[in-house]
Each structure stands twice: as structure tokens, then as C-alpha cells.
Length: 203
Image (cartoon, helix red, strand yellow):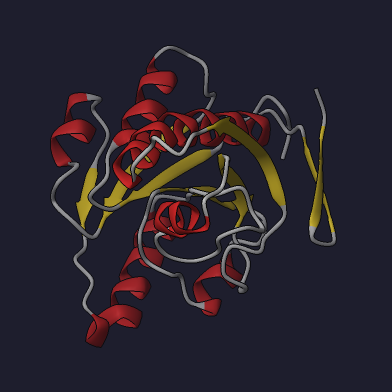
């Protein structure tokens, strides 16, 4: 892709809106050079946010029985809108291998831990039970292996024994927003080089 081209981008979200809102705010401020094609969600919760920023909102609910069927509908919408980049802004669905195969190194995810620690669901609960002194967030490209794709950006904050799980979640949300935005911006500015399961991110 030529560096002066603005890629069509879709954001996938679920119920939590902090990462979505932050990305839309940064886009409006001119920090993220992309054309926002749609916000796609399996919940209706984030519709008011997307509408506030003037971005089309597609509500495609997913249940276990029709997951692949709905994925096919999402793919259809992405292809129809000529989407080149997909950002998972706390989208709480695991994408199928077939879906991921359509967009190699073009699906970015934010995971709410300092990978490779605490892969999978409820990492803040895992971190709390383990008694860690730092919590982190990781933005990475999505591969067929859960939370195991090439890492683009990471950061951590210090926590203490006084922090509850709720405190970890609250503090972690701020970190997630920053790390995801950093990764999206690096990708949009063509500063990420992927080799194997690693990246080099140029300043």
C-alpha cells in the first residue's frame, strides 16, 4: 500500500466501549489517518457512540449456533465496503481460522494483559489471583493461535496488594486505550514490519 493512501478501516466491538470511543475520538482529532467504513458489533450497546461520530453501525448478534453464518455476513460487509484493516476494540468473539485467513496481518487486537502472560479470558482475574505487581496491555496482529500473533505495542502499570479486581479492570482500561491507539497508528503509518511471529516497529 502506498503511504499516501488512506485505508478503509472497520472497528469490531462488543459491550465495552472504552477502546472504541478512544479510537473514534483520536480519528476525529486527526491522529489516525484512516477512512472509517463501519463499526460492527454483536451487541447494540455501542450504537449511540458510533452514531455520535457519524460512523455506520452494524449490529450483527452472534450465538453459538450461528457463529460461522454471522462471520460470513461480517466478511460480506467488509468486502462490500472494501475494508483493508480491521481493529478489534475489545471484541469478545474468537474469530475463526477462515476469517483470519482473509486478512493476514490486517486484524489488530487489544488483549488486556502483558502477553504472553494470562492468555485468554479474564486476565485481570488471573493477575489478581497470581498476585502480580504489574498489569499490562498488548496490541497484536490476530493469527489462528489465540492471543499469540506478532506483538505491535505493549505497556504496563504498577499495582499493589491494595488493588481489587475492579481496580485492576479500571486501571487496565486506560492502558488498553493507549496501547491499541499506538498500534493502530503505527500500522496506518506503515511503520510495522512483520517477520515470522515478531514485528519491528519503526519510530
